[in-house]
Length: 276
Image (tube, rainbow, N blue to C red; front, side, top):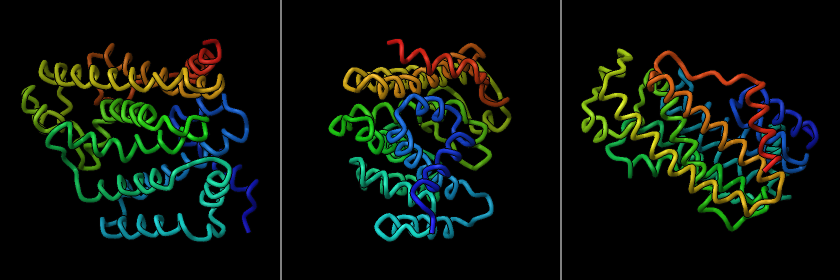
C-alpha cells in the first residue's frame, strides 16, 4: 500500500522532472501547500499524457480518461498521484468540478483539433488550464477568487499555444483560431513549412497582445494572497511573460523550438517574487 508520504514524494519528483516552469514557483510555498499543488500538477500531467499518447487510438484515450474520472470518487488504491490528490483534497478546498474540467479538456483533444474562433478556443483553454488555476486557488488561500485564477490559467495556456505551435502541429492540432489565420493570410501549409512570414508575425503579435491582457487580469489575484502564495503565482506569471518576451525577440520564429530559460534565470525570477 502506498503511504501518503510516499505518494507526495512521487508527485514532487514528477513535478521537478516534468514541469517546465511550475516547479520553480511551487518551491516558494510551505511544504503542505507545495505538496498539494504538486498533486494537482501530477493529475493534470496524467490527463495531458493520456490525451497526447501517440500509441493510443482516440477511443482508447477516451476510455482511459473516463476511467480516471471514475477514480476521482473511488478508492485511490496504490496510485501515488491519486493517493496524494485525495489527501490534498481532504486538507484544502480543491473543487472536484475543476478536476472534471481537466478531464473534459483531455477528452476534447481527442475529438477536436481545430478551433474556428477565439471564443471556441477560450472554452478549451478554460478546461485545460483555467481549471488548474481554479483547482489551485483554494490551496493558495483564496478559494472564492476563481475568476481571477481562471484568467491566469488561460493566459498561461495562450502563451503555451504560441510557444508550442510546432509541437502541436506534429500532434495534428492547430490551436490558433482559424478565422484569425485567414485574416492574417497564414495557411496551415505555412505552419507545416515553418515559414515566418509578415502575416505570421502579425498573427502572433495579436496572440501575444491577447495573452498579455489575460495575464494582467490574472495578476490581480496576487494582492489577495499571502506572501509566499503570491510569490509562487508571481513566479508562474513572470516566467511565462519572459518566455513570451523571448519569442517576440526572435520575431515569433517558434518553429525551431521554444526559447530556453536557464535554471539560473528561472531561480532569479522565482526569487524576485519574494521581494515584492
